[in-house]
Amino acid sequence: MFVGDQVSLDVSLTAAGARLASLVRSGLLDRASAQAYGDGITGLTPADPLGPVPGLSRLVRVHVQDLEASGDSARFALRWEVIGPGCEPFPALDGDITLTPAGEHATTLTLIGAYRPPPGTASAALDREVLHRAAMATIRGFLHRIAESIAYPAGAGQQ
Image 1: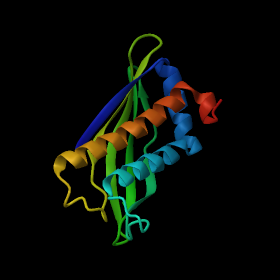
Image 2: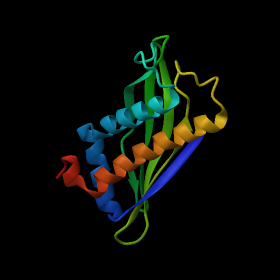
Image 3: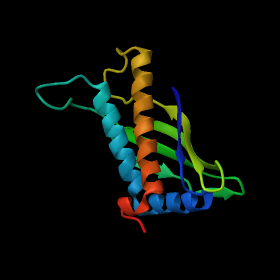
């Protein structure tokens, strides 16, 4: 399913691009991806008082292309891969993260992509609206983690 969200930042495009590139190099983007994916999985699986669901998928790899900057934007492609019950890699998200100017000292951070329900969940039994809400919540959480790290780099351990 297609997903997208955007966040406004009170940071110039130049500063936001530099901070985003730093997040990629530092591994923070991987950690934000894992947290967002884990939160999304939790929202799709029923509560089980006996413990975790056997065979539940988990995020294992985040692929990121180099940040490409042009005069009016900066973007990179992103892929989340998960391992499901069959131990085969599965692309859970293919998306583009884009920074565009929203004024002299403001930037818009956007993620647009295709999100696939995680293998190993009861997703086939869930209705499409529930899946879409869970996917959007996952993407929104991920984008907000990135936005916070860009807007407040000292709070994310960046300089």
